[in-house]
Length: 90
Length: 263
Image 1 (cartoon, each protein chain N blue to C red):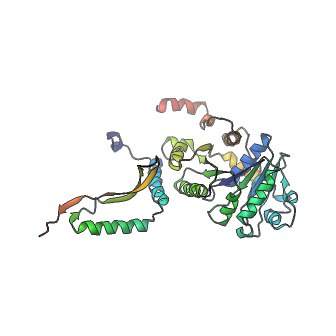
Image 2: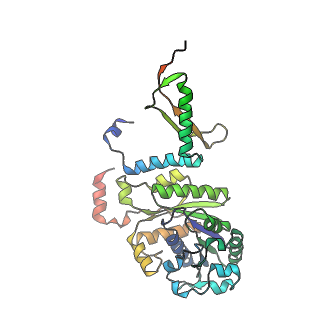
């Protein structure tokens, strides 16, 4: 985010565009919000076995990424999971 | 051999019927022999937009079921002798027709007409499948709204899955004043999101409501929407026409104001 963005309220046109992009990514990947929610919960469960994670900062979504083979884009699962503390195993 | 064009959108109320009426009439004005087919069985509309509702004797289902010959069901337009309408049935369901039957009808009409325009019903069910079955190319109409664009994206996916040869989008009801102040997605935004070539932008124009009230397509008239539709017709014929300046109608003082506002 640039400095100018801090002072400017986001226009509703841009909000619409951003929302639409997100909706279309999951539409195109044929992945319902319920399935996303399940994936998210399972990931939290697995990771939590080993580390304590910051649930507030958690960001898991499906985005588009450049594919290696051809020139198109493919859906990819993007997960940003902030770690609070590594659990010490005794 | 004629070309079959389906006008579709997914979402209802974005302007499919108005687009079909105006693009069809425009192509006729440009000298082509055109037939418009209302494929929205059960919800007949194209006849009233064209102002031909009082002339209907037979309809699409009558033709399909063999109750009459195609020629008997075609209604000749009031204004252009090379423009015809095949109205839909008002008292039947979408499943009165199959995609194969539509394909056969389109093939027959191709021999006689240069352009066959199909006004597709909203949705992605039977009516949609019927309408796209015999089509060579598709015009996807959308407005710059989240819901309409989302549905258009789905439709584009389905058209691809059905191996539609050519698909273009029409951005309808654009309001330049709102785009300028950032409260509406621009046609560039829509094209970027849908990743399909644009064939025209039609501004939100009161003249369309007036024209529809009177049952007169406004293509070719002097208003912005009329010009925008005519440009779409020319592009369909393969002409290179630059996009319309949608602010042209704003008058001298507004333009002058625009000079000082911002770069």
